[in-house]
Length: 207
Image (cartoon, rainbow, N blue to C red; front, side, top):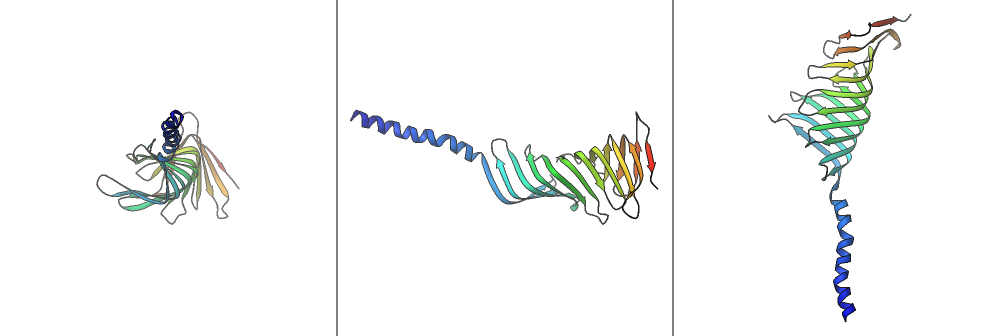
């Protein structure tokens, strides 16, 4: 009888002990299929839309992790950029968005403008977008590449040291090349300016 009482007392404890840890591991991570989410400004205007066929929300870290992400960025209720990446992370109470893995940012224009990078970082309270790692901007006429670039709210892209600039010819081959510390490209006027504080701007012409 004494042994039976011990088993009755111990058995529920074993069950509780076994269930506690797995429940914690399951509950802090929730999977989401076909995520469609819009982010709005304080005034109620849409800022961005996010889509992922596979995502998970970490309750412990308060972060949203997404795969095969497609993000649309808006300005004055008009879609300006579409970004695709292998993975992304939304953290800091939906204020910091970071994309990584074959990041492609395309402008909603007719010039086939695209920016490729390893990483894209955006503080949603800030209107500047940061691109890092093998950054390359390309359209029908030029190629601009650097290690880092900043796309600001005035539709200008600042390429940071070092910068390589190529002009294409009619056969889509390089005909003119410029190397500089920094460069600034305007998406509206299609103009580019170069700046070097420690080194001269160097150019090459191909025949």
